[in-house]
Length: 128
Image (cartoon, rainbow, N blue to C red; front, side):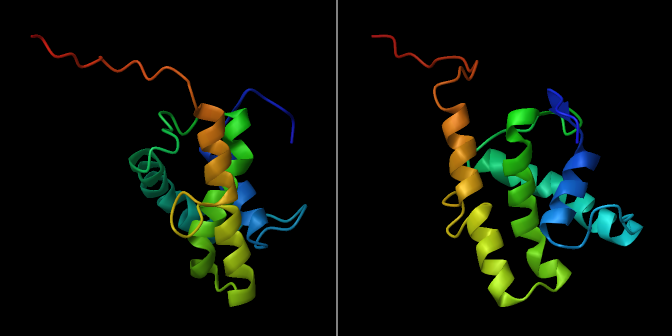
C-alpha cells in the first residue's frame, strides 16, 4: 500500500479482512465478505463517536494515522461473524476496541492521538 494522507472505506474493509485472515496477499475478496464488513462500518463509526474515541466524519477521507487502528477495531468487532476460533477472537478484540469497550490497544491509541485537539464546540458559560 502506498502511504497517503487519507484512506477510503474500501481500503479499510480490505485491511480488516486481511487482519481477520480472510484475505491473503494477491487474493481477490469475495463480494459477500466485503459487504459483511462494509455494512458494519457505519455502526462501528457511530459507536466510536459515542464512546468519544474518535469521530470519523467522512469514511472516504480517513486520516492515515488512524487507518491501522480503525482496521484493528473493525476486525475485532466482526471477528465472530467470520467464524474465528475463541483463541483468535480474544486477541483481535484486545487489539481493537477491547472489553470493556475503549480499553483495547487501538482504541487507546486513537484516544492518545486525539487528546488535546480542539473540538470546535461552543463553550458553555454561566452568567451571574
